[in-house]
Amino acid sequence: MTIEIVDYRPDHAAAWARLNQGWLAEGGFAIEAKDRRSIEDPHGVFLAGGGRIFIVERHGEAVGCCALIRIAEGFEVSKMTVSPAARGLGLARRLLERCEAVAREAGAAILYLETNSALKPAITLYESHGFVHLPSRPTPYARADVFMEKRL
Image 1 (tube, rainbow, N blue to C red):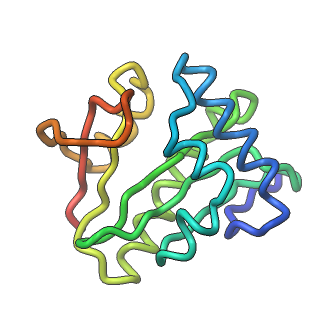
Image 2: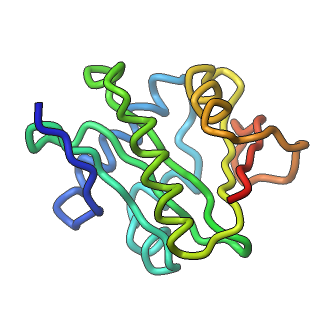
């Protein structure tokens, strides 16, 4: 099985939208204004500000994604998902490891993320990767009720 994690390219736009709309629908979450901007303008939202977007390709098909948003002390992990058909292959862990490696290379002090308490497999992954829970804080996402960070 050929699996690669590659940097986002403009030809990934449709897959990026499909993957993100998919996990939001699967979780029963509304597509919020910030989601819409992220899906429609990944370059402007993530890349232009010094972030990154990674796409997991399996046999040339995009089956997962994750973005890093540049924040003051490091990066926020955002929009991480793996399509249902590709789950169980350790791809989310590989995405998270790539995010951490890139953050460390950039001299970041932290990785931060926001998620929803219903996304238990994701929270378990984050905890196993060394993320710790933080108190609630203001967020632009109505669904975000779990806040975590990992000091690098």
